Image (cartoon, rainbow, N blue to C red; front, side, top):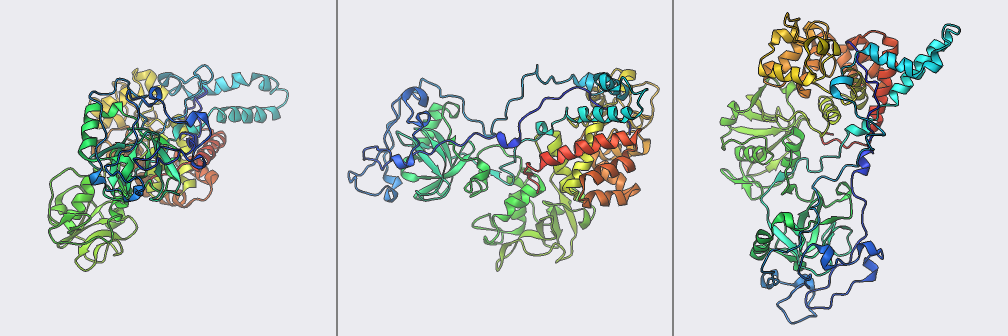
Length: 605
């Protein structure tokens, strides 16, 4: 493939580990209602910055209240309190006049980038399509002091080139392209059940249901939370922002009173929990796989993760409850519906046979696929077994092999092949899901970084085509997707000049050869995907290697050396000019990518 370089310094961001808020100090549990509110100094930080909120910083106009109790017996233990008899707190007649500070985002904030003046971001339409020759001349100019004597000393030529490669590699920092772990992978969204903190200090959210367990977050007076589970227990499992854990029920206002207050005040005007422990370190985070927040969990792994939490529950013929009894077809319907992979009406095991996209064979099956048998239906776990509502004796199980019975057809409903917040994450997750080792994945991505710029742009069009057609890669992709540029024009040269045909490169791997581009079209245009689809382009790459270089494909999947993988992909697939120089740059990029992704917790692994 033709190689394209970017000679401009790219913006550098901090590692993903720094994206989460720094844990704050712990607060004391409020005392039982009816008692004097006293903070135990052994459970509270001495830092003034985390002292009790005043009226001005709580975001509410009224004075925070003490927990109330309908009983006059103040010696009664708070754990024994009957919530059903707990009188509602006195509510303000109007919505609080002071709007609290901005509600914490569900996603932890990203460390801001350095100032543009320190690390300018290039114009995509210019730098990303800049010819290689220009890029190389820029590097040579930048290193003119080290190359001025090359005629006199031939050995300096190699030194200058090595210096240029080193300078180029230092402009890349792939931390920019990695976000945080998908903490709610496998979760299902549920209806909101409102509650709020019924305290006048702060209510601690605990990692488990006892007072000595670790504090994972805190709720200020009347801060909003959502009841996820155990609403009738002494400890209620709640969610608020990215804080999930247990609070004592007698300090939590639930029911109609909470609904009325939240409806009148407005969710956006109420504070959420303050995080103390990072969600990924909070063992309570996955206590229940339900959330009130938007989730993208229709990936195959997400579906299976969600389905397996119901293993052990009862089978009931005709039943439709994941907890109290369900049959096989309702089980599949409930899981796919709640994970967002299917939005149709319920159907029987027979009906599932004609829905979704047909999977050609068991060898092509992925996690989350629906496996149809005679009178039965189940979910494939991706590892040779199925998750199913089997029968009354065994209930919901995940131990049987997928081929225990005769398979009639396999259907796919998971359309989200691109998992991640950035192009780098999507490519990494996709290749890992398709069986590539971490080293092989990094080797491929090191090459992609040289073909499609360091932001791994799947719509990048080589500069020669940009100059000839006057179209940017984004414009070209949009015209192909709209049908204004035909499939044949994508594959072959066009007399109109609006094309990336011939030997001009396009996409993640700088696809150029007409035969390779026919694969690209087969897995994008022909499947109704965008030509710039990451999953479509990688599907076409894998299909091409399966047909034309299966040994390379196998080596990339099993490689335990980043350098070997990057070099093999370059020399056996890319085959670009100046291989020795390209190898240095691509191996350097691949190693950087590999190191950065050691810190990445992939939702598909």
